[in-house]
Length: 217
Image (cartoon, rainbow, N blue to C red; front, side, top):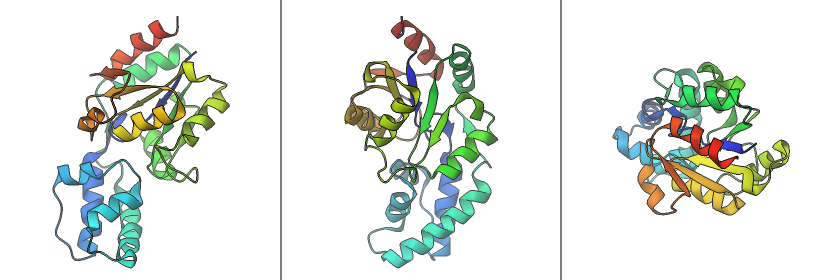
């Protein structure tokens, strides 16, 4: 069976509004004006510390960034499911893949406690045998350690493993791990897929089902 490794933000979940509100809450805390939604979304993908560092701007000190990050975590913990939802077609695709016995996992640069809380809150935790976040390993994506760990846990080879994501970070992670990559056209940074083209592109998560089943024959 193929091993399917999913990114979270921008791939499985539409978390843009909750992330924007948490980032701007942290900026307000630091007496800064809010950023527009698309600007914040462009900063997502490399973990919360990088997100806040970018959102604070080059003039911010490390101490200010630490304070803003702590407040971001505090705010996001309370509001991470206010508006966040699964993208259309995601639940149906996960249901079909799970029913077919496909081993599935989540590998994200979001802190793992938030990632697991969101997946549980949206009712899909039972679809995944593992969820790893940006603080699960010493290195974040695009380092291949997360993919390699999941392959070892699932006893899957590189040829049977797929990384599914919406950004160049996800595709580069797959490249670094020597596995195939599927890019999704929705999400937070689909334009970045032009930098590192994936092996396959889908426009709806339900398109992954025949792709995986055909590829597994």
